Image 1 (cartoon, rainbow, N blue to C red):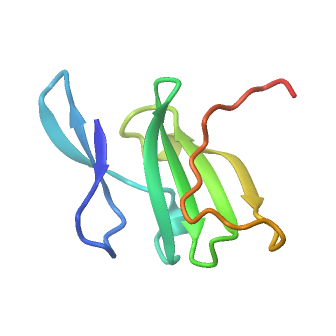
Image 2: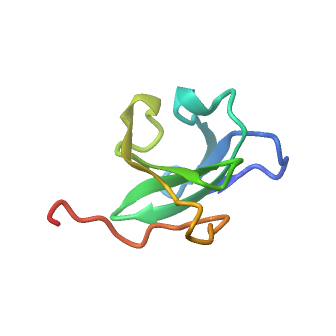
Length: 101
């Protein structure tokens, strides 16, 4: 179980390990430490999924944490931008990813 801390400018995730019943902080990928962005977290395929939407609401990165609690295990799945001709969704959420197109 993972959730954001309540402070709006705090860029930390708090995880609760159901097995050990302990809270711990999870680190974001380094590229976001000095950036202004909004993020959302979800479970996707048993992994933690981070969606980072930058302040312009056009550029979006989607990351997966492959090994719970290991900062180096963040993998960027996709980066995309929403063209200005398409109304931007302030908080897009991925539904699924496939290795096959």
